[in-house]
Length: 233
Image (cartoon, rainbow, N blue to C red; front, side, top):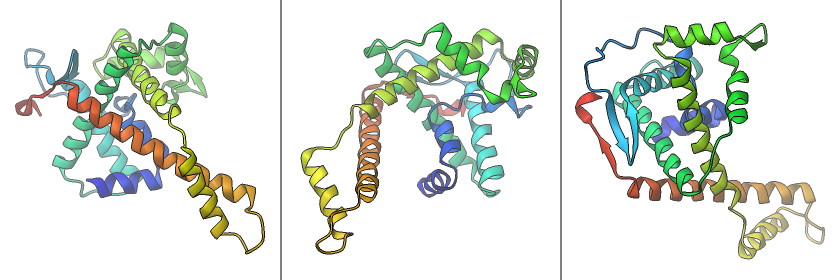
């Protein structure tokens, strides 16, 4: 599974990021995944006060299937792997929502509006189409207020992630490593090229941000009171 994630993030980073950071509207293309009755249990997992609904889980699974099939051209993805990717992604998003609550982060009505109208899945002829938006939601058994709540939660989780990432900086010792590495790549007696120095600095910073995000994510999961209902997966 880790190999698949790394391959996807290398070839199509913007797509996989979208999936991991929220999977905003993976349901808008596919249909026919909802063969359960409304009377059946509808929560496959809980993270603190937040619930992962079964329909949300199924839509997310469909998004991962489509990503590996259409983008990575891999048809032999095991269902067990897709199940784990979908569930882990959703639990991670809910965990970041908990951090957003602690930081008292909020999404304004304007931010939510902009996020939805800029979503290309809801565009016709290059612009947002209200009727098309409503038809897509209806076709996937979702009402506008339900989708807007889901999108708001995803935006909150993204704000929490960005807050952690932006707070990450290089220490003086790490900057020394950057300069030493740049010097080793420079001809003897010459000054390091500023462009090379900046590229190395950014590589160090991106790696540190990734480690910080992983550490925060692990900590959030550890304290998030996660319950998974395996029988509903």
